Each structure stands twice: as structure tokens, then as C-alpha cells.
Amino acid sequence: MPKDFDLFFTSVSAATVSSMSTVEMEVFTNIQLVFLTILMLFGGEVFTSMLGLHLMRFKLHKNRIKDKKIDFVTKDSEKNSIDHIDQLDMVTHSEDEKPDTNLETDIKSMENEALKFKSITILAQVVSCFLLVVHVAGSSMILMYVSLISNAKQVLKKKQLNLKTFAIFTTVSTFANCGFVPTNENMMIFKKNSGLLLILIPQLLIGNTLYPVCLRLLIWFLEKFTKRAEFRYMLKNSRELGYGHLLPGSHSAFLAFTVFGFIAVQFILFCSLEWNSESTSGVSFYQKIVGSLFQVVNSRHAGEFVFDLLALSPAILVLFVLMMYLPPYTSFLPIHEKISTSENEANSKTKRKNIMENISFSQLSYLVIFIILICITERDKMKRDPLNFSVLNIVLEVTR
Image (tube, rainbow, N blue to C red; front, top):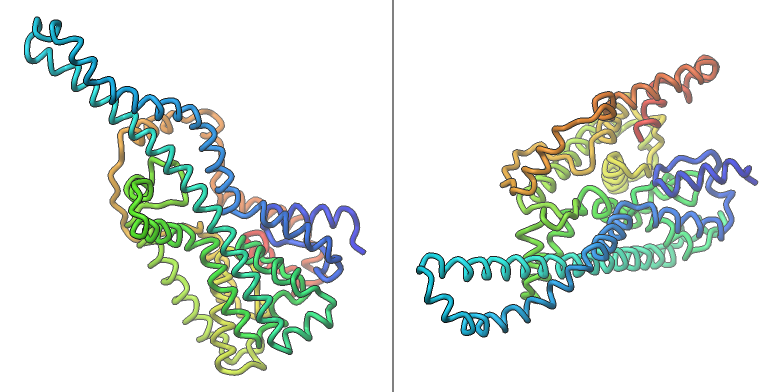
């Protein structure tokens, strides 16, 4: 049985979706796997962003009062104009248009605030439904696969893993890009089950790098189907909503091209260097294709592996390190977006850096610092066991 500190470390790793564990996964009981599943679900980026949307909706709850006042203002506008006919006749025509213009401006601003509040409310509901549907559909497909495919079912029975727990655990971990799998061998034991890998690949993408693209496509479809103004507002004013995962149309398109471009480059290099290597031996041509695709898709941030990483060539490991270091929404294509007045004000404020911002390091600096510290503390093991405690392996683990 694992020690208490090992359980605590694994729990923190699951909550932060970092996929690091000091014990083998098969030592955990079924109820422990359920708790790890809950921690991974709560720590996932999509789930936390959904909570952020609901908190934002609660903060904008006061705007509902303004929404209720819109009808009152519009209904009384004619009455107010009639009551002030005598006063309006006593002033010039230019002065007469000024209060009407101000009134129209106030009404439009209040309508925009009301539409923004409704859009955020609906967006929170859309993300919640998206999260629920993906997990239910993914768990159902995995459960159906392991129930129908005899060799996959036999593996789980041999390891005394509950089929439903395995399906839900794997779906949550894959969508959150955590990298935990209830088996000690991760997905290596399923490298001949290409159907299972094909079920997991879309979950890996839509839960991380392609989530903004899928979210925008979903909102576009809902707008075409329902014709609601809220969805139209989301598509045209994605930045004003304050939800960082809802990107503008051009940015989403560039992101999709970049993600698939990275996958294509990795897939070509991986197949070129590892096709006849020891790590990919023992599988058929089709299984190699699917396994290689699964491996390169996981290289960005997920952490699941179907081939032994220690047996891969150093060039592929360095490529994986680079892919892991890149942020999930990296796009190298040019983006030209109009910056609003509010964004200009925000940019001007960010220029006023305080002392802490001036002395802060970059992400790369922190990675280098921790790699050096680990190399110093583990220098004896690096001498005794250079295979498992090499500099490249340390770089790989810290970056992951």
C-alpha cells in the first residue's frame, strides 16, 4: 500500500493535472480511483473556466436591474417628450437634439449590457453542457469498446479493474489532459487496440488545444439553428465577454491550422525515425499508424503514451520537449484584430509595472532553474543509474 505522503502527492498531481505519481496506479482501490477522477475533473482547464463563467455571471447580477429599467425607459420616453414640449420649443434646434441623443445612447448602452449579461449566462450553460456531453459520450464509447473487444476486456479483468471506473477515469483524465491511466503500463498495454486509441484522440484535442475551435463552431451552429441574438453577440464580441477560451474567428482558424500542422510534422518525423525501432515493434502497419498518431497528439500536454518513451530516439524526445513547452493556444500565423478602447486602456495600465513584475522570471527561466536544482539534488543517482536519471529524462519530466 502507498504511504500517506505518496497519496497526498498523487492527489495534488491529479488536482493540478500534472500526471506525476510516485506509486504504480494499480495499487489504488476502486474508491481511490473514483476520488482521483473527481480531482482530475475539478482541476481540468475547461471545468475551472466554466466555474469562472458562473462567477462572472454572479458578479454581473446587478446588471439585471439595468435590464429591467430598459423597458421602463423606452415606454416613458414618449411621455417625457410630450411633457417637455413647451421647454423644448424655448431652446434652439441644436440644443433640442442633445437630450434625445443622450437618451438613445443610454438606451443602447443598457441594451448592450443586458445582451452581454444574457450572453455570458448562456455561454456558461453551453460550456456546462459541452463538458457533460463529452464526458458522457466518451465514457460510453470506452465502456462499449472494452465490453465488446475481448482482449481489452481480459486486460481489465486480469488487473481487477472495474470497467465503468476505467471508462470514466480514462475519459476524465484524457479530456483534462492529465495523463493518468489506471494501468501501470499507461496505454502501452492497449497499443494493439487501435479502436480505443481512436476514441481517445478526439478527447485529447477538444479538451486542450482545439477547445476554442470546437467551442466557436458549437456557438456558430447554435446561432444558425436558433437565430438568437446572444449567440450572434458571442461570435462578434468574443473579447468583450472576458472568456479567454472564446477566441475570434480568425484566431480560431489560425489555431486549428497550427495544431494540425504540429501534428503533421511530428507524425512524419516520428514515423521516419521510429518506424522500425524497438519501441514500435510487435504491432501491425495499421496499429503503428494509429499508435504513432496517438503518441504525437499526446506530446503537447496530455502525457499518455503508447510506446516506451525511454526507447525513443533523443531527437524525438527533444521534439516532444519543445511541443510540451509551447502554450496550448500557440499560433504562428499572423493575426490582425481591432483593439477596442477598453483594451487600449488595459494595455496602458499594464505598462505600469511594479517592482515584483520587474524582477519576475520567464517560464523558460523557471524551467532551467528547477532542472539545475534537480540535477544537483539527484547527482548521485545520475551517476549510479544514468539510464533513468539522465539530463534528457529530467528535462522531459520537468517540462511535462
